[in-house]
Image 1 (spheres, rainbow, N blue to C red):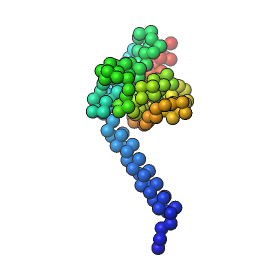
Image 2: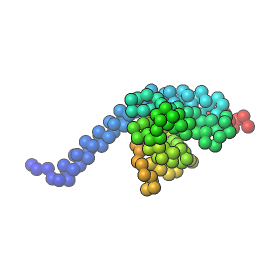
Image 3: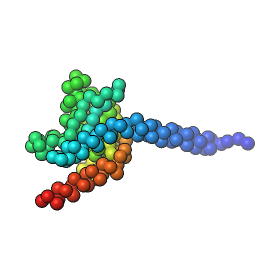
Image 4: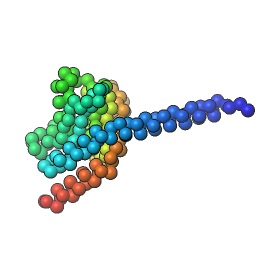
Length: 179
């Protein structure tokens, strides 16, 4: 009994898709501890500011940049966690290119931050919760795959999605109750 070309192709595709799923699972377990750090920092900053935190991890697994939202605190429209982390990492790295680095953040970056990540050539972005109103990596537009994007980065989402969504939802609920 011979296997035709289509069956061989489908068998190979199944193996590849299983491998890619395993890779995502490996990423989830590998960056689980970093996302916990992001969520802890976001929770802490949530006492005075929108609870968003970001870390940049270099190719050796070290945190070289970290940021939390500081728009209200500093009266700065560019005070987004991702941009603050990028500035710090660029200073530490002494370079603006982040091809081998990973940004980890608890909310999908907005279009401004997603554009900065493309421009900085970030290797991978991992985020918890989608932002269907302002998200720049799939929520409203996916700048990582846009035809104008000269750099393609890998985007992983959903690590601690429920915890991050609850943190943000509770923060906005509290904000409405204060007003």
